[in-house]
Amino acid sequence: NRSIAYGNGRVVGNDCVDNGYAVLYGPGNNIHRTPYSGRNFEYYSEDGYLSGQMTEQEVGGIEALGAKVVMKHFALNDNENERVGISVWANEQSIREIYLEAFEGGIRGGAMNVMSSFNRIGVVWAGAHHGLMTGILRDEWGMEGAAITDMSMNAKWMDYRMGVLAGQDYWCGQKGTMGTLDGSENDPAITSAVHQAVKNVVFSVTRTHAMNIGD
Image 1 (cartoon, rainbow, N blue to C red):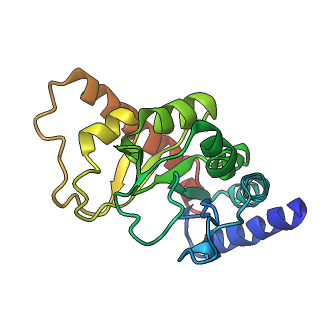
Image 2: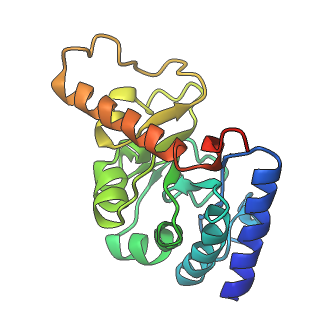
């Protein structure tokens, strides 16, 4: 029920405001591909359309209170075991109709942020997939906020240069053994991408209730 989902979002949003949280790492928008998936309790359903409808309303309720959501894990992170760096293969129709619909619903509800996923889509890490992080997320859906990674740990394939050029804005956790942006100061493409990433992060933060100084 759409009204119930919106009401649930308002409850979560009020909790965030009352406890001083401006950003929420959720909701989880992945799909129940199997009953045995380790994190089904975080996700809405096995149906892309239904997940999208519920996400739209819940996110709308949360965002109405000035808290911002970070939808995760974008995208095709639909298994828990061995999800770190796994290559996922699917055709465009199934990706759009099943695995992206919940995230698109969240954008309709006002979501401005996503958390990218550990997995690869084909052979390209999701956070470095320009067609996903920029082509779909921003150019098609119009997301204006920021994209953070999942906990980066020592994931060598979650490369800074590849990610920021694709539309990944910042990294969660320590860089570990990943590549850095050191020595990229004179690279115009990297410099421009970093400027845009900073803008996206600041834009997102300034749209939260954290800016209500003195309240």
